[in-house]
Length: 128
Image (cartoon, rainbow, N blue to C red):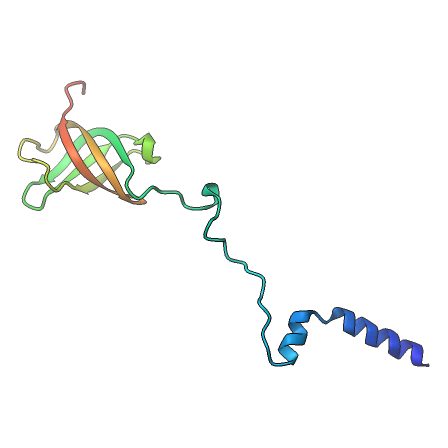
């Protein structure tokens, strides 16, 4: 009854992959990559531009001219796909002396992270 032994040997040989044979021989075959390639299509990557710019408007919740920060309860900022929320922004080089809590303002900003930005200009919003 050599036929069943032959069938089992052939089945085992077929089940053995080149990767398994390399391991048995003490070498490693390159495993298929499960990581996303560095040149992934834009829709597959978290496509947050490093320095996107946008405009917004809202109400000043607080201002700290000494620290150079302003907290604004702003409406949605569609260009950055941000919902309405209250955020504290750094505002280096921006004159915050004329801005106070409760002021309705328009502002320009430069995105520095997924949910971070720096205010580059701010002014009273006469339309609000």
